[in-house]
Amino acid sequence: MDFIFTLIGATLRISTPILFAALGETIIERSGVLNLGIEGTMMMSAFTGFYAAQTTGSLFLGLTAAILTGIILNLLMGFLSVTLGLNQHVSGLGITLFATGLALFLFRQVYAGQQTPPSLPASFPQLSIFAGTALAPVFSQYTLTYVVLLCVPLVAWVLNRTAFGLRLRAVGESPEAADMAGINVYRMRYFALIIGGVFMGISGAFLSLAQLGAFSQGIINGRGWVAIAIVIFGNWSAFKVLGGALLFGALQALQLRLQAEGVALPYELLLALPYIITIIVLAITGRNASYPAALLKPYRREG
Image (cartoon, rainbow, N blue to C red):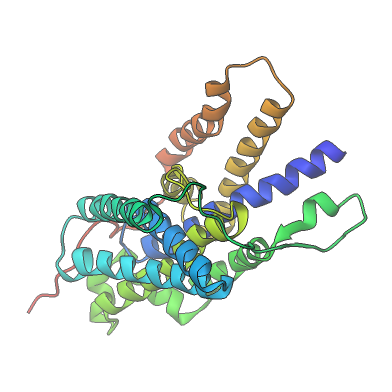
C-alpha cells in the first residue's frame, strides 16, 4: 500500500501545473480561441515568478508577478487573434517562441557569471493533512495542489451553471448569434483570455516556486503542449480534463518510480512513456471530440 499511496501523492504533484494550464486553456477555447502560446506563457511566468521571489524574498510577490505575466501574454494573444483577427495558430506559436526566447535571454542576462545555479532561499512548503498516518504520502501536497483541485468543480460550475458561462459558451459556439443577443463577443473572449492567463501564470509559478524551487531552461518541458492535448482529451469538460491530467501525472510518476527501481528498460523509453500514451489516448478520443463550433474562427462584426 505504501507504493500505491506514494504513487498517488506523486501523481497529484506532477499533475498540478498541467491541470492549472489545462483549466485555463479550457476556458479560453470555450470562447472560440485556441491559445498555442501556453508553453511560452508558462515559461515566462516561471521566470518572472522566480526572479521576483528571489530578488524580494517574497513568494507571494513572485506568484503575483507570474500571474501578471500570464495575463499580459494572453492579452497579447487577444490583441493578435481577437482584435486584429490574425490566424490563431500563428499568433499562439509566435507568442510561445517569443516568450520562451525572452525568458531564456533574461535569465542569462540576469544570472550570467554566477558559479552556482540560482535558487530560492525558500519555496512553497507542503501541507500535510493526515501527517503520521498511512495517507500522509497522498495528502502531503503543496497548497496550490489543493487549490487546483478545488478549481475543477468551480470552473465546471462557472461554465455550465452561470450566466457568464452561458455567454462564454455562446460566443464559442456561434459568435454571430451571441452578438445578435447583445453579448459583446470581443469582451467575452478577452475575459476568457485574462482568466486563462491567471491559471497559466500560476502553472508556471508552481514549477519554479514550489515543485523545483529554481528556474532552468527545460523547466516547462512540453507541459503546455500536454495541457492542450488534455483539453481535447477531456472534451472541454473540467472534470474530464482533471482525469486527463491525473492520467498523465500517474504515467509520469510511474516512470520515475520504475527508474528508481532500476527496471531493465531503456532510460529514453521510460521518459517518453507518458507522452506516447498521451498521444495514443488523444488519437483514440480526439475523433469524437465536440469542438466549440467557432474555435479558430476570428469574428468580425458586420456593419
